[in-house]
Image (cartoon, rainbow, N blue to C red; front, side, top):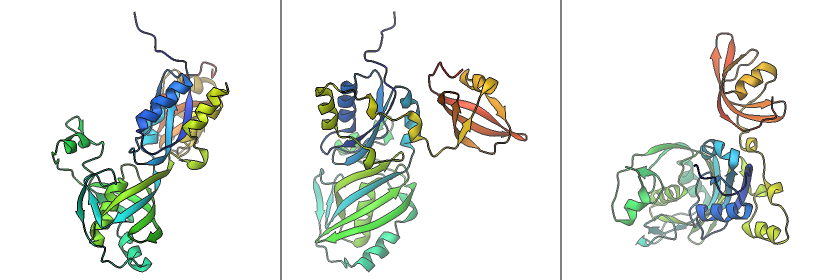
Length: 309
């Protein structure tokens, strides 16, 4: 006999403002318990040092967590110059200290930052969660093992110098998935010739969600203590998929999609993922493939909704 999953069915996305000093999974488990949810996951871990936007997916929304993981991100980081650490942030042991004998004028710093804007190659940190032979790199690093890491292409859409004080820089970064801010700061420090590490990191945007829509765990706990439902804080799964165009279906085409069958439509030119909507709202994601003079929609991720037909 199959075991029934404990917890109730909860569907949607909750944007959390993650506090410093806890893991993303720790926050996930805490919020999952508050909701009494059967199924939940996050969309890309933040380091314990980091704070900010952490979307959590519940139920049907977990089907789209990979798309959210692949989305662009934005951060504000503080870089301490003159000190390198094992981990690239203030949680690691200091490995080198140098005097900061470098021009910290805005003009010079802008010229340095300009070299990191656009498409760049970045070597991931040994203290990242990237896998090597099935194990995250940080496990090798903790054992003193150095693994060769090939540089990977990432894109820095925006890199803005926010402030300079003493031996610290504040920068704002907008970037593609897979960009390591610790590695970026270390590389900036290397170009400046004095080294650098991250002392503060705040994610300000992920999957299109910003801090304006984020909730803090104490807020959720207070609502539970007052006997208030937390479900009203959830947003629908398609709120994180606005980067994909929308297609509306009805009749036999909608029924076919809901049955997992591809359908042909005319008058559409989209290719790639599209959001599909039916009579009662969001149906799921389909992939639009050009076929003759029309487009074939192949269902990829459908949400459960028995009322669409």
